[in-house]
Length: 144
Image (tube, rainbow, N blue to C red; front, side):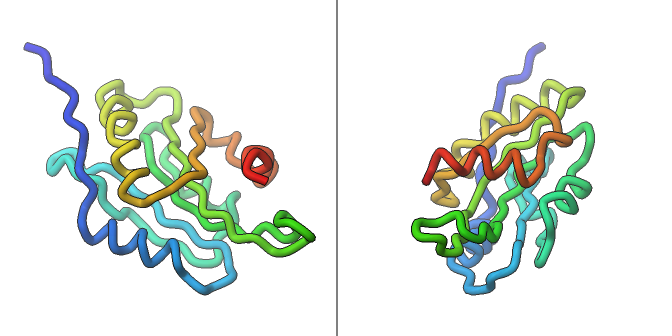
């Protein structure tokens, strides 16, 4: 008997947290790590981080499970005329070796989460080691 892919809903409290995160006034790097509660089939908050580097964030990601890190990074001089910018980025981390059911559930729920969070800078990685400042800045360069 085969199971069908169920696209997960986004937890209402997570939607509110993402809305507040989007309009935060702080100027430090921050991240929200989201995961799927497989039993409830719901995207939920796993952890919040303040003043975290991208290197430290990648250490928090599981090696064999997908996750949705949502980061706000400080990118000095990245904006027009050398202004400091605060790009909000969504990264879908789906490392090699994940269970196929997990990969399908995360991939199938990604667009619903992106819509709920109203995000435009969306990136994916299959190798957590690729997640570096340079990797992210190269991807953000497209939006300049």
